[in-house]
Length: 107
Image (cartoon, rainbow, N blue to C red; front, side, top):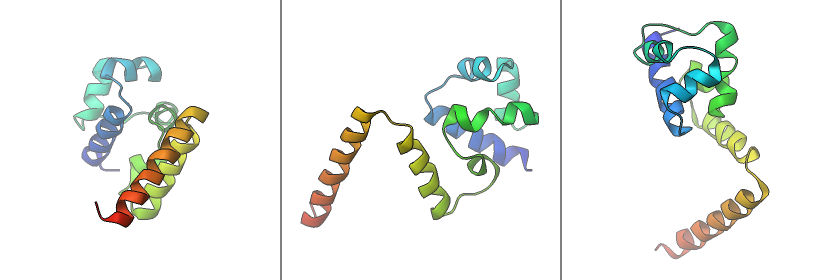
């Protein structure tokens, strides 16, 4: 596995999850220095740590390990949608309907 590519993906998904390096370290039970080393591409997490990352970032493990094609993106989005609360589902549905109207009207 390419450490630099993993580092880029790890950092991007951490930020997208809205987590600081310290929050990520706490959740993974590692030091914040270790998170910095991962994001610098200097280290890779052990398997027991890696297993926690997709749950924390709410992404499929594949997203961290390889380039994502369109199918993987859809799978990742579906996973995120599944984790939403009922109110958030309703808000997302309303937003999608609004976007469909805008798209049809070419606004």
